[in-house]
Length: 332
Image 1 (tube, rainbow, N blue to C red):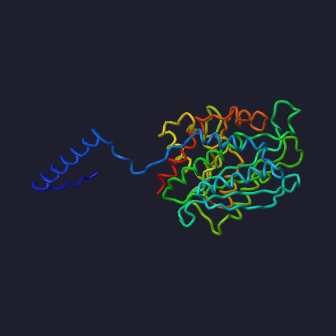
Image 2 (cartoon, rainbow, N blue to C red):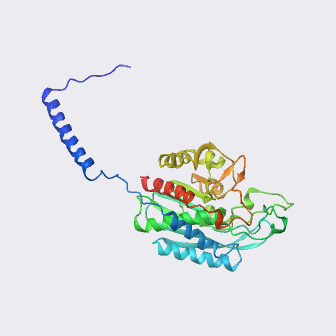
Image 3 (tube, rainbow, N blue to C red):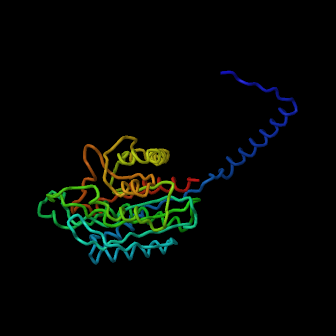
């Protein structure tokens, strides 16, 4: 390759040297006094706060559609988002479960800077599994679960992010979408046909009927089972198919923050989850941060009665929450 050289007059060299000395003196003053400030001030995610939001949901009991606990928790979530300055709307909708059960479902949406066209979508499901059908004790397999990790952890992280957004908003608009009826899929003993569309009913509805006509976002991030101790998050299969670049953005951010032991840069399972329908129907490139592995499957207490607060770890909540905040606050 040929290089082009330019002859620089002597007086310009002297001028450049003077400017360089001036800048060096200023930098030395900064290092001896106040440190130079980052161009983007990312708030600190409070894991204790997120933990309390997880606990508050679990304290309602199982959040199964058509129950009093579900209705009460829905009201709590709306009030928290309103308290944190979001523009809040709900989609009250009747959804039909795989077995014909009519579910009184509610998608809850909290928007920041709703007038801004450049947007980021953050999602989690807030319902809990109606049956502990993976419980080792067969007697428990028709008992609803608390869903501390499977459901409440992702919502707890998003509520803490909402609290931070209320204090300092990033450049882009943010939509927090809490979808319902994700976990009312077939019981493991169901002898009928198992289909992808029997899961994630609330996100299917939202993806086809968004809260704003013509809604679009630059990308989406789904949180599901993000609170267990020593959790590892791998590149989920559908996320790689539809939003590989967003996977890299998030995992690189996590590793740069020192959370590489949580966000492992390896391919994981392919999971039917809310993001699948957001990708297919809303056509928003959306990833799923979810604990799963080829060796152990999902979170060890997945769909069992042990999915309670004993399984929630503040360090994991911090790793996920701070990573998401770093991503959304630095997006331009």
